[in-house]
Length: 163
Image (tube, one colour):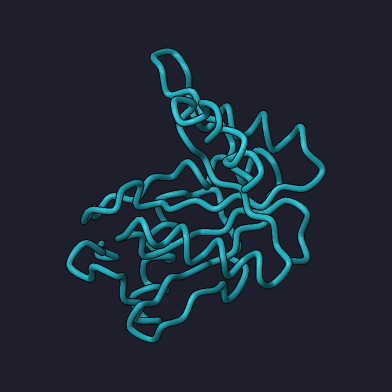
């Protein structure tokens, strides 16, 4: 990945296998991707493994915002490739979250459109995505892109790129 700071959008997110498959793919092409994981999972010895795999510890307790934590983390690093699933869940969700947009705008990170396509048995990223100042419109354009591409999740019934 040519950009030092990047957000890799992962769609469709319908299975816990999405992480495993995309991690193996990204490391096979020489990348080091970062993902967000709740701080509760960073106990010994699992915490050591998670950090080695590029996981970023996130505090989801009351009074903290994940977006602010990620902006601070990304701004403190020279290089960071953060994988984000805007659906926010593995279940069907028509309303995608816009946190990736706020993070990218605040840090200057390049956004890549990544995918897990169980129908074609492909995983990867295709192109960069130019953000505007309108997060909702950008999400509509992303959804249209993924609909046109025809990506299929492991559980297709859980994916929604509808308006």
